[in-house]
Image (cartoon, rainbow, N blue to C red; front, top):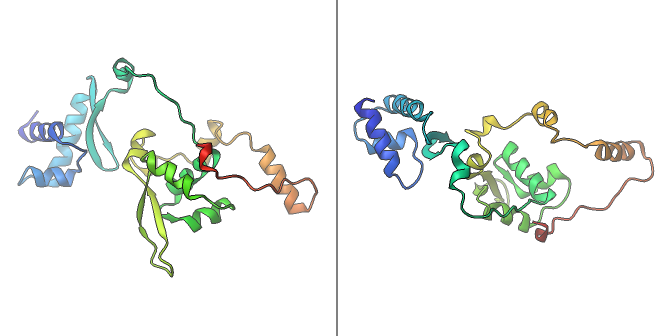
Length: 204
């Protein structure tokens, strides 16, 4: 390992939070960003067979436990918290369309979105307030966080699965009921369920 790679390794080991290649270059003084990126790739390759890995999440680099060894470090019982259907829909809309306002989320979903649903996602650390839309009323807009990418094992939003991948994994099934309801409304048939879905935050 050359001197720059060793310096990059030491800086990331001592860092309190993940760092970008640009931040590392500035921290190390006269290092070029391109050289730092090459050093990062070199260090990441060196750590591939080890118990910890150097990974990039949302253009920021940090060390983490090798995925196949994570079970050895768990000493507490995990509590599974399932998101409500509303929260799952909102998270997906933000991930694929960010930055989006609450009104835009509601337009895509077709129902109102409660503030509690957004609060749950922010408390989980998966979305954040990304500013305000420069339109009348200046509504708040939301975007995903690096923690969202890390939790779902994504390097960037470009790694989000497409429709074909979601269908192949069965995540879009079953859709028959929703399709039949939609077609029934389109043809004017009776029996469509007009009950509005609930966004009660207590569902989460």
